[in-house]
Image 1 (tube, helix red, strand yellow):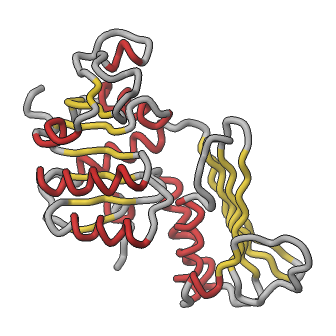
Image 2 (tube, rainbow, N blue to C red):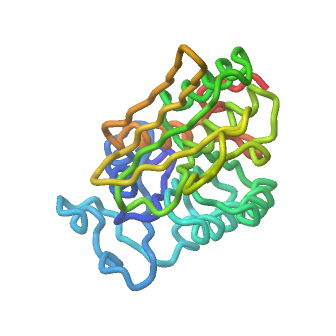
Image 3 (tube, helix red, strand yellow):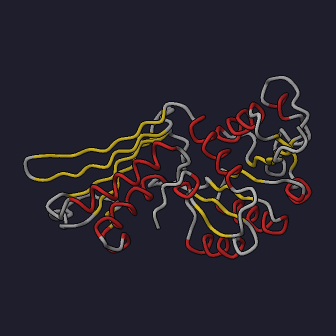
Length: 272
């Protein structure tokens, strides 16, 4: 057991954090060696299994990431941009794999993550599921096949606690559509419509965010032309799909050279 890759999970008390902890603990290919929470959190100093309402796991929740990450093989991180940038630096120091599922990262955050990737293997994706990454590929292909007579709209729905919009997955899908069309997403992106907006711009890609209840994640890419519509759709009904994908990424990254990768690389779908 001790020769299995040691995984650290950040944001232990969050929905994804708890799912990741359960997934790693249940795996026969990895072992849970550390969990991290923000300073002052009620879980600090507790066995994470007990904190989650179950049996002891033999791993204590820490608010000091440096010693926890220093002896790990991988960090799986679904937290917030500022924390993720800090963890990227620590993972680079430790030369361990950093799997990033955090969304809402700004351009400056991405620059810092890229700098860390000179020393560590970083796998970052707005969505870790196999189905979504297949959807990304399909979106790119369909966008390339259909001309600007087909308007593209990306519609996403998530739970009422999600803090960023559009979702990271929606942005992945929008980027795939833009790549398929051979255009710059920033130049054709419509993020909101309200009031007298005028007619829809030909060739633009629209984004719509729905927030409510406990929706885990639903994404539609609509191609709409006069007389017909094509809709590509993915629905996640269980967060375990993201946790399994993240663990797969952490294991895939073992022994890789430093650099930036995504789930298309992990799944062998990246043709670039």
